[in-house]
Length: 296
Ligand SMILES: O=C(O)C(=O)C[C@]1(C(=O)O)C=C[C@@H](O)C=C1
Image 1: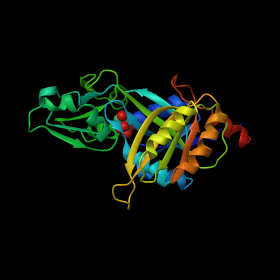
Image 2: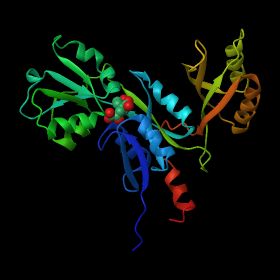
Image 3: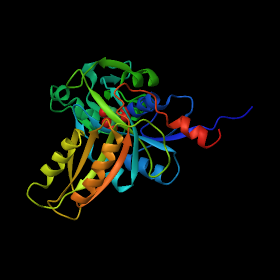
Image 4: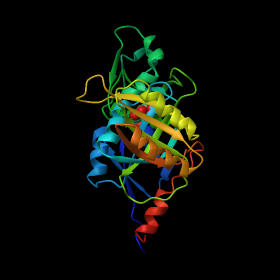
């Protein structure tokens, strides 16, 4: 029997982390082998070093905002955004079965997860320690493996199940409706097929009056809907900024036209990805394409 070759997906974190869930939503579990990384930087290294086929990376959260270092990684490593998925995030406080909430003296979690629970954590007494750690699942796993009494982790429900921890408090993020947007990343210039209606662009502008408003005007003239704009400092050019935008379009031709015009109007333009707006959290087509291309 022919053995199925699995597609390697680099994520920050381990099994049952939110990145793992996002990967399952986009690609399913069967064909995927996780390449578990300790940092987002390592994720980018694994992908560009051909140690993984794709990567899944959180890019923004409805409470904590944009994960800015990840914008820089996508840009610096020339990665391509090929799909996206929106995960509902509910945070829970969890600890060993013997502990009650009154026993807890330390809480560990991923920095972005802690940010989402800032209001909740503020209510604890001042001697209570909040410690930034790795991904949510690794922090929970460590509590179980090292039998850490008085220590809690903040993570998703699936993590408590996976590592046998008790949930002490539920839905502790600052807003009930909490979502993280993850992107599927590939190396640049590899072939893909997909119906596309969304793009992520990065541009730098000349320091001239009206340069940003001209770009925005251009989008509106070409019926391109701007869904996000984020500025980031250009390293080595103090007080100069690069703009990262997400846009929606109906007509791909018009989108191509606007990028041609934009290229002439800005100092530098880079297309970070052209993909589908995945509001419905549909499965990615990318594995199908891989199978066909590799004759699997
Ligand atoms: O620690 C995890 O479980 C993750 O997948 C990381 C991460 C993030 O990077 O934002 C993912 C989703 C949530 O927003 C919180 C943490």
